[in-house]
Image (cartoon, rainbow, N blue to C red; front, side, top):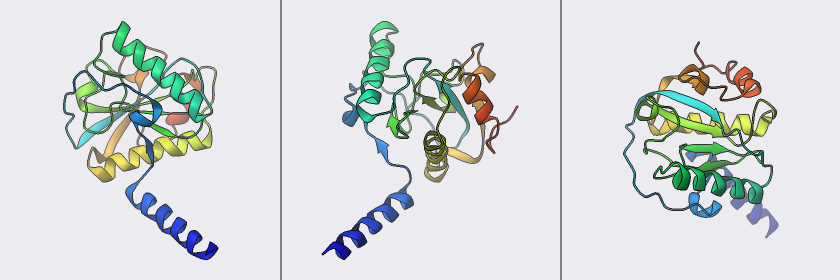
Length: 184
């Protein structure tokens, strides 16, 4: 019986790998439904990396609390229809659904309709991304290419390259500049 369970687990892991990174759904982290959505095109040429500049989280529960707080700020204070980012990366190494696939974000003025927005939970002037977080971000970007959301030769920017900001924080900025799709 134990061998059958291990075989089933191996099959499920292979199936998940074939379909990409497991994304924690908005429902699973307790997010609210968006007030509206605008469709984001496929075959985008850009992805923009951010940090939330807020609290770092290292557990599913702590990340869910932080996500709900960010969503409340974006929706209630800024009057956006939803959390601003397409996906967020937690200190637990999980990818969390923000607006998700094929939905225009609110993460980089003049770039929202032509880029995918991925944000790391925390302040990366202070925090450092773990290898699990880096792998998660690279995984969701690879998924975006395999789904056709991003073109294979997409350009990766840090938020500071498209807006006057410190985002994504110096530590994360130094990290993403080593990634193959980053461009000056």
